[in-house]
Amino acid sequence: MSSNRINPDSRPVLILTVALTLTVALVSFVLSFAALRDAAVWGNVPPALTWAVPVIIDLSVLVYTAAALVLRTRAESARLSLSLVGLFSIVSVAGNAAHGLELNEQHQHWIGVVLVALAPVSVLTSVHTLASLVVVEPHVAAEAHATPLPGLSDHDRELLGNLASTHPNSKRTTDTLAAILTMRREGAKLKELSTATGMSVTLVKTALADLRQAGLLAAPARLASYQH
Image (cartoon, rainbow, N blue to C red; front, top):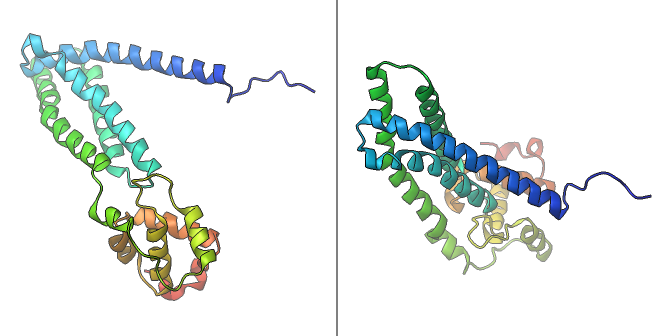
């Protein structure tokens, strides 16, 4: 019996969703652009350069959102990128709201100053974000040539390989998971595991939970001596 319901994974639905999302994003950017461009004048920005303020603020949100998605795909911490998304989103919302209010000149001036002051912040954080995406950290490069850790069976290695990330730049490799497993069995604490693997404590916790689910580690209640 055929179903008349719409398949959410069908190509037409996906294309429509993408088209509507891009339309909303474009219209929102145009509207925000107009408001922030006018607000830039409050910070004594020359009229010929007022367009730069909304570009810096609103495009920064897109940059850090994309970076957060990449980092999460690599199983790396995206806390900084998500924090920057929140910061620039709040500033954009505040700037748009201030533009619609009848503020006195003093308040307008301070809002304009804040908007302009974010320019060097955006440069610094954007460069840092780019570096975190394209530069391979030394310990990650070393892991590519690491030798198998002793004390693990072939079956264990196979399970670790299934849990490892497939992204080439991810810190969650078979060797880092093997290190976490071996060190945890020896009583290592979360901070020690984080330092040894270069992964955040949050990502180490996630790895430990996956190792327990795969049966490679006992439940926390049975590892009292391993607790930090």
